[in-house]
Image 1: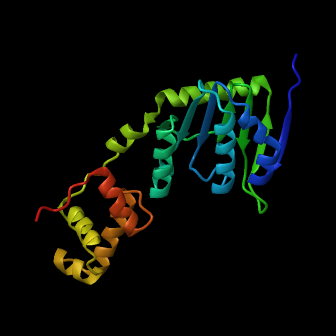
Image 2: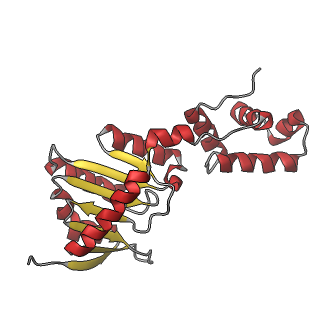
Image 3: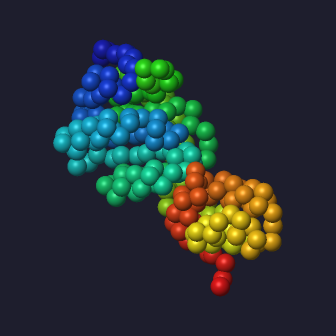
Length: 224
């Protein structure tokens, strides 16, 4: 029986210092499941991991990223996923809750994300084959029922009524809330409530993001 290891680290820096070599060792399969892109390393640490993988990566390496819809809320995250996909990774979106935020390497190592602490998120690293196989099976089951990134984005187009399209046009034209409300024939309070509802349906965190999201989805604006 091979020696099995289990150890915990806290924060991105310690994760890279103690487990960075595991990323380098990926040869056949690299699987990542996360609620959003903040679960795993912050930009600097993420870049360090990617650089290590590129420097030692295998041509036959299959990389899969499984995420929840909340990962698509910000344009920066969408851009990152497009970049990852352009480099050969497979990206799917799962409507089901992800019970484990996990990285699996070659079906022999698992890195499990734990809770946030004042000194950084806790991670548990294990080579226990029973645990790795169990979570791997769960990952593949969720992966098989998840939707490809492009397919999800196409099917996730909100249905906007005429007022919704008019509000979208107002946001893009730079009209003040007062002018836009007057154009729609509603009160300022009602207009702002409709803007908030529109932003929620577009999964946008700001009015600017709402415009970007609408353009990305190809939503029609009100005919002139």
